[in-house]
Structure formats: C-alpha cells, structure tokens
Length: 183
Image (cartoon, rainbow, N blue to C red; front, side, top):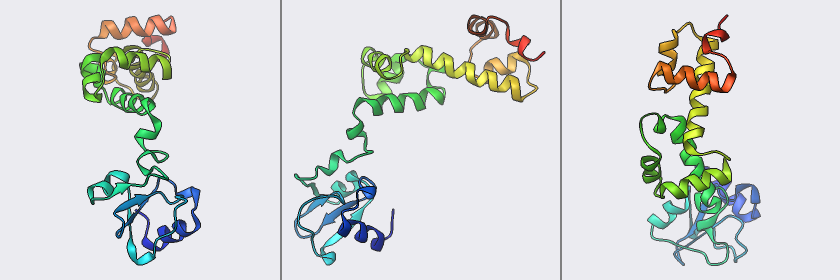
C-alpha cells in the first residue's frame, strides 16, 4: 500500500496512473471511490485509503455510483471471464492437471468443466488438457537442456505419469525422441 501523502496527492490530481491501485473511503458518507472519481473532493480529514475494493467494503463502506470502484481497472470483475482463464493457467502451470482432472480444476475455479473448456477455446485457443500438456513439454525441454537428469527423472519431474507417455507426446510434437536432444 502506498503512503497517505502519495495517495492524497494522486486523489487531489485525479491521477489516472493510480486508478485501481488504491481506493478512497469517505468516513462521513460511508462511500468508497476510485482516485479518478469526478465527484466533489472530500476533506482530507474525512478520508482513509484502502488497497482493494473488498478491503473498503470490509470496513463497512459501499461503492460510489459515479465511478463504480468495484469494477476498477485491474480487478478481476473488470477483466471478466479472462481472469478465470488466468487463474486456471496459473493452477495448470503449478501442476493442477498433472494429477487432477478438468472437472476438478473447474470446481476449484467455481465454473463448470464445459464452460472452462469454452473459455480456454476463446482466450487460449486450446483445451485445458492440451495446455497442461504443452506446459509439461516446456518443462521437460528445459530440464533436457539444463540438467543431467535421466529421462525417467525428467518425465516425472515435468508432470508426466509415465516414461512411455512422455516419450510418445514428445515424439508426436518434435518428430523425434527426447534422447536425441541430448546428443
């Protein structure tokens, strides 16, 4: 969180560079706003600053109807369904589909598996399973180039459940076995 003086100066200037980085809570009206709100500026003694819209709401404030702070830039609500895909990509990169299913991933994200697959088609251009496979292959390729691990160790470290599956997927994509990359 930025210091009070920096936030106050940005508020007084209505600086768009700070939009979404903090929120202004007005003690007298119990409303919170964005730094770019066109409403009349409250007195400095009557304000507090909050790092997020949920923090302001937790303090008992309600959103301003003019600047709509609950949909400020860079918040998940502003990004819409793209934020769901971004969260899914982080979970997939962390290995969520190495041991789990698309249905389990969708459940963690609070959406249905079919909807998640549609979102991946729209934003990524590939299914969640195909995306996870690509992430595994990227990890494997890095391990092949940067380590002296055995093929079996690389297969399991990159998220494949068997050496046979690792070899098959690798050969299908690159047209040759993974061992040929080391030669």
